[in-house]
Image (cartoon, rainbow over all chains, first blue to last red):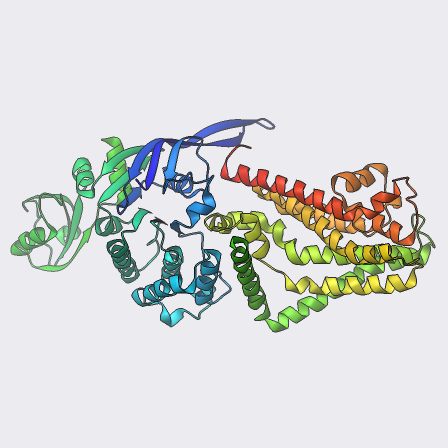
Length: 318
Length: 269
């Protein structure tokens, strides 16, 4: 097991004003008895609402935070006690905490990171060239990091985390704020990284397509507890998450309440726009579209995915 | 071997910092000159005082200038190398400090090398100029020991100030507004160290001799250079003790820093 967490707890003491002078101490459990393990080569999505305990767990795994109690081992090491050793074997991308030097050209950051990780040029240079080619970074290698777009910077961050060929790559919201193309390019890169090198990946995300494309396994946390450990289809069928097809008709039509496998959620503008919910494990978007267009002429359509927050909320309620 | 490569890593970081600053030549030049000018303006304070009195705390204009020159040089070097440590709360808030923790180097080492404020070189140059002028003006009975002392003193003083910077910056692990607190000791200590300690009250004197040992930066070594006993009765050998005091101060400040870091990662507070 590359990651082992057993009965992991992390509490924070919060002081709050109570009355004019008194301040009371509250203990808040950010992570409350989480147990899981990750085998080498797995790609695991770690999801949950904001404040559910995702970042706290990741900080404990990477050695930034000491657990209040419980057992944690990453690459067989105790993260905070053997932090420097662990740092050479894992890579991390935290969207908000840049590993790059904002006032230097992007290329210089990699040279510095190579020096910090004490990597000989023969080791990091081929790796770097590979990342530059796959992530199409050569147009902005000489640009100072502060002038990069978010998508460009994120490609740089991922390369920075992989320069020392880590066994485990931890990504905290790697696709947040990226446009569709950049998201897909990053996902394709991560899939390849895993296939070619067997790198274990642990990522937090709010983006369902991230999980669909990358992760065969999901860990869901809520209020510091692990509430689900399994595949995405298993999660979706358990909570009954729905996709919604929104169709715009050419002219106002009758309510489409007889399309097989769907439930009509709402009708707008005298039937000009209609929302049909369906379960992805019972029918497909293509079948629903075909059934609808057989009944009325379509002008436009969109499919909305179940929101990850919504899935988690349903899981918690069920 | 391992140490040599760690040194290479730090050297790469420092060189990159210098390169980044040198890319703004005009503003860099302006800042160097203005830093130098600030020291001269500050020194006007001494000038004004001696316009009114002949002696300050029992010391002449030239003698106080000597203390001033040593203090400014020592503080200038410390400020140049570790002056940005009081910005720790910003590093913590921006997440830069977490990035340090994800790299296989000491977080303190990375923090020290993360910003090398070359513009503060102006302060150092002016400090040494004032010191040189003072050394000509005062009457020193030169011996080999005093020659060595005058060379070592600014460096030992820089080490003492650096230790104060390191120790007080650790407050940033607890308090978000830690910068002001740290400055009270660093810049405050710098201000006090430039004057004869005879002008201060007992509490201030003891605090800045034994707890935050800035008396060892300029005042006490100046007594040894001038061949004068301490008017306040401290033993003469203390005037030669800046180096061991600097060593002790560093050991203590690294311990304080480590306590702060342990608090930050939550391993007991």
